[in-house]
Image (cartoon, rainbow, N blue to C red; front, side, top):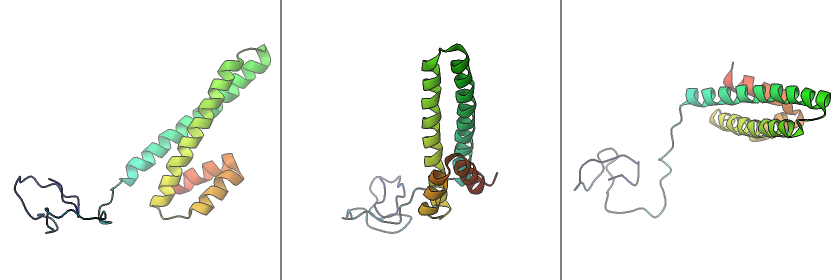
Length: 134
């Protein structure tokens, strides 16, 4: 069983009250309790942001290389467009993860958005360094 109030797992089959908070298990509340909160490990979030940052940097380098190959050989446009799409997707994932870190650190969303879309590449580097402190 799971307590409706605190989310504590109860191993007893016929328990009537929660061992953790003492609330009744027979009455289901009409509104979910704000006590239940997903706990996130900040170190895991920073590691995920670092991995996405490295993927984004590799995508920038690959896009530059395939652009040079496309200009020199007048071919391979599909590879260039594929890597450009990968660059865009990795940037969106990185911005999503950095926004999550900004919310965890209680920073303003407005400042985060203005920094990253006012000057996209420099703002993303700045946000990554500021939020992960690396």
